[in-house]
Length: 407
Image (cartoon, rainbow, N blue to C red):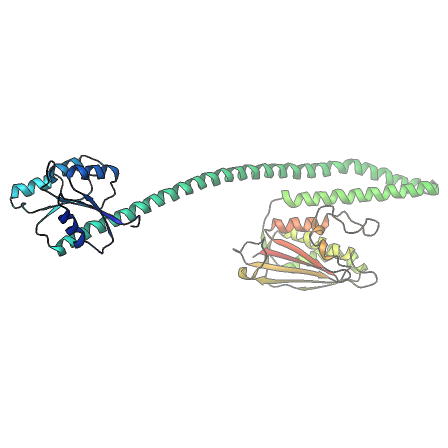
């Protein structure tokens, strides 16, 4: 018999009556437990209370059905088990009343009608089945709720730890930005003094220096200029983090116009041609985007080919959110894709991430001038716009920078 079978306790002092009940209720998936006396029924019920119904004969020796039912009803675990009395003498109203008073839910007079008995038993067994399923669901729900509660407590603790760690990182970043800004700013004062004395020597005493002295002085002048460039780059990098971010719908053509004006001499020297194809305005921080484009164009000028006119192509287009296949971008927004391509010396594909690092240079300072901060500033500005930038390139085949900014 399967564990979840519906169990029925049948109580009668006559074996033939027990057999008769089982024959009437056969083939319905019930599990029958027999008791031949009231005392025997109580003993069974003390060990197992999981019965759907009790079919009990009233007239039994020593302890009749009424006494047995009264004893059953005294147990909190058993008082809800329905009892149907089966008797041949339950024809007086006071006798019937005594049956209900002792705890019966129904009674049947012998000889029993098989159809009525089957119907009544089916009502109580179905009720028992539904209650058992409901109880199992409640237990499963309770267990699941406990798991969810524990998981929520664990997640809450992890969230608090993450929030605490994030707050510590924010403070340290603020401290680092402030330190970078103040340090770079304060470094300019002694540098100005060095430049003042260098200019005095250059104007008044340089011709009087020996060849060895002139060589050493030139190295001092080079180092001083390089220090000034480095400090200015650090100041620019720190400002991209600490300034207020005020977004405006901006025409990129005006940005490029400003950049061309700032780099006019450099562009003329390289015979550079800048081709643009912009669609719609972009929600950006205007002055930061001027810095971004200036750095990218300056980078293209620096790494252009010798004796080959520099060509730069800058385009923008709308990109729907469901077409962006970049993990770092939120699927909640549409994007403006800005591509910046040049025909310069390019770079090895394995350096596509390295080039955005602070102080990262792919060439020695004796080959290409620079501080190694320009593209790091570009990446920081893109991040300030909640966007993403990546680069692709091949040696002597130019480079392409792809920028994605939320619309």
